[in-house]
Length: 122
Ligand SMILES: CC(C)(COP(=O)(O)OP(=O)(O)OC[C@H]1O[C@@H](n2cnc3c(N)ncnc32)[C@H](O)[C@@H]1OP(=O)(O)O)[C@@H](O)C(=O)NCCC(=O)NCCS
Image 1 (tube, rainbow, N blue to C red):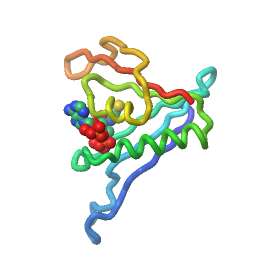
Image 2: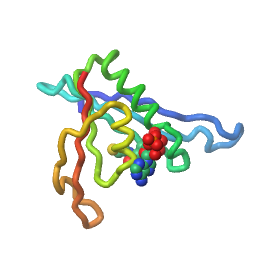
Image 3: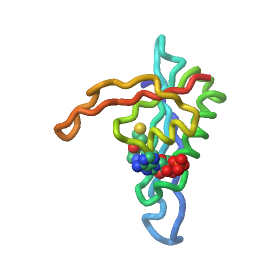
C-alpha cells in the first residue's frame, strides 16, 4: 500500500450524546505501487444499525468517482469474501464487474473461503 484515502461518516444523532461522534462507516482507496501504480483497492464498511439504507452504495459511488477523476486511477478493484452477497450487490450497482474467483483464498474460523474479485476500469 502506497497511500490511502478515506471518506468517514460521523454524524450527530442525539445532540449531547457522547457516542454520537463515533464513526459509523468508512470507504477508502489503497493506492498500489510500481507497475501497479494505476490501481486502487477499494474497501468499505457500514455500522450494522445502518445497513440496507444505500449508504455503502452511495459511498462507493462517490469514492469511485474520486479515484477516477481526482486520483486519475485507471482501475479500481475489491476482493469480496464469499458469501458476502450484499457487498457484491453494492459493487455491481456501482458498475464493478466480476473478474474471477480465487478459490479457497482465505482461511477463517477453521474454514476456507473464496474471494470474488470485482473491478471497474475507466
Ligand atoms: C456490505 C455492506 C458494506 C453493505 O452496506 P449497506 O449500506 O447496507 O449497503 P447498501 O444498502 O448500499 O446496499 C446493499 C444491497 O445488498 C442487498 N442485500 C442485502 N442483503 C442481501 C442478501 N442477503 N442477498 C442479496 N442482496 C442483499 C440490498 O438489498 C442492497 O441492494 P439493493 O439496493 O439492490 O436493494 C455492509 O453490510 C457491511 O459493512 N458489512 C460488513 C463489512 C463488509 O462486508 N465490507 C465489505 C468488504 S468487501
